[in-house]
Length: 443
Image (cartoon, rainbow, N blue to C red):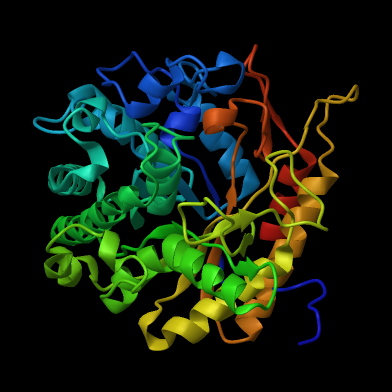
C-alpha cells in the first residue's frame, strides 16, 4: 500500500480530545468526594515520582469553564471526559452525592452550550477505596456495584452525553494495578490477577445494560491495544507473542465482541465465568481503541514464572514517557482487528492517541512542540491508511487536552495540547493546539 500524503477525512469524521477526572480535576477533598484507590496510592511513600499527588492537578474542578472555552476555540466536535466514581458515590455504593452530581450537571451543560458533544467514561481507574477494601476488582460484587453506579450516572446525564464508555482500559487496571503493582491498588499477583479482567468485563456488560435502560443511545468501549512484535520468528518467541496478545488484547476484545475468552487465559479465570459471557457480549455501537505503542516479546528465560518475557522496542525515537514512536503500528493494529473480528467489529473510534515531551514555555511565551505535531500527523496518516484498507474508523481523540497528573510518573510527562504551569495553573495552548485547530477547520 503506498503511503498516504496529506490525508483527508470525511466531513462527518469526529475530532475530539480526551481527559480523565483523577488526572485533571484536583479538589480531592471537596464537594463530598470520597477516597479513591489513587488517593491512597499517592499517599503511600515511594509510589509516585517525586512524591507528587493529584490534590490540585490541573484544578479543572474550579477552572472547567476556562478549559471548555479552550475546547471551543480548538473547534473539537467531542470531549471525552470521565466521571469520578468517588465524587458521585463516595463509598462506591448507596445514595449518590448531590454535590458531585451537581458538578457534572454544570460541566456538561457548559460543554453542550459550547457546541461540543460529551463522551462520558464511567470509570478511569479511580475506584472508591471502600470497594477496594471489600476486594476491589478481585470481587464479583464490585461489578454489581458498578452496574448500580452506571444506572445513576446514565439516568442523570443520558440527555446530554452522546457517547458512553463504561470502563477505560481494563487491561491497565488488571496488569498495572493488580499484577505488577506499578499503579493503584499496588498488588503483585501476576497471573492470579486475571479474575480482575473478568469482573471488569462483567462490569462493562452490566453497565451497557444499565446505560441502555437509562436511555443511552450510543455505548461502546475504550481498550488499550498493542500490536505484538515477537523478538524472532522462532516457534518459542511466536508462542510467547500469542500469549501476550491473548493477555493484553484478546482478553478484553474477544469476550465483548465474540462472547469467548482466548484459551491461554481460561485456566486463570474464576469459576463460573462462562455463565457471564452473554452479559459481557452486549451489542456495541462503537469500539474504542487507545493506541500508544507496539509490545515486544520473547520466550521466557530461565526462572521466569510467566509464559513470556517482555522486550523493549528498539530502533525508534522515544517519547519522554518511554514509548517508542511507531505510527504504522496503529495502522497494523486497526487492520489486524478488522481482519480478526470482521462483521463482529462495530465502527471504530481512536479514543486515545498522544505523546509526552519536555514541553517548556519559550521566551516568546509559546510552547513549540513540533515533535507532538509530527507525532499526531504521522499517526493520522496511519489511521487514513487503515481506513483505505477497509477499517470503518469514525473519529479520533487526542490524548490529552491538557497536561495532567500522569499516574505513578507524576507531572513530568506532558501529554497536553495545552501547557499547564503547575505553580500558577496558567493554561498556554501549545503549537500543536494551533495545528490541531487548523486540521479540524480544514485550514
